[in-house]
Image 1 (cartoon, rainbow, N blue to C red):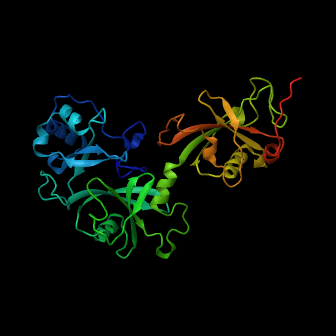
Image 2: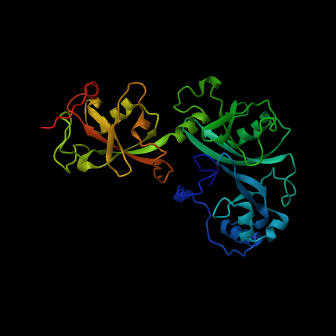
Image 3: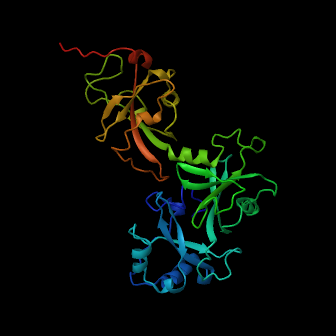
Length: 361
């Protein structure tokens, strides 16, 4: 699951789980012991129970979910109900991580980790494909330097022995720290449960020059701001201003065939003009400046038009304030919004330079 996960943290624990990469999730008797569950899970994954161990997971203060400690020894005799109450009190379910035995695993696989030994997770970022791949986990000692991990990373990503790498720690989606290769893991504050992302160093022979998202930090920044926007024509109204293509009450302004939504998945930082040009192309319009956008309220009705300020207005300005409306998420875990638009008979710049006056007669 971690190998295919393209977002932050180890995986999704909610409805965003893709069907092809779903977690093991089943109801179990509260009185079942962890040892009994381990045997049942071993049969499920087709691996001998001695070749893997289960870890408790903890919700950190930065809202991430990470491995905490291996559940070995007397923990195997505890009931699942007791473990959920003591190890997963923040959640309605018991969350566990399955660690399969690897060549670098401690000799005593059924014992707790020594004080200065930590398990960390590794991900490789391919800037050319804009893709993350989980390449497993490894053990590190607090006194080792970060550069000591490089041979293991090159082997995991099938890179040549002289490939320069850049390493990053996933702290939270908006904080991706680049690691100093000369620091010890203790100095870098890398410990059990942390996720280290690595890539071919972007400064090496212009490796990142031709890529839209050249670094891990750029990738997560784009991920944080990614939105799925459904553009629909604004319903026409009887008191529409003279510059729009409105009709009578209940009509739909001219737009996509049959009034169907046009869907754009992009960064909320996308400039207004780029959004307008994309929509104009979808509608077969020559002039993108003859479009006007409206934010949509909680009731589904258009609100005030979005004002175009060149160089500053972005797609985010077309979306409702997140403090007042939490958008639903699609299967990829991307927030979905609706924006209304209308086609104009004159340039949007001309309209915005005018002062609106309502005349009653």
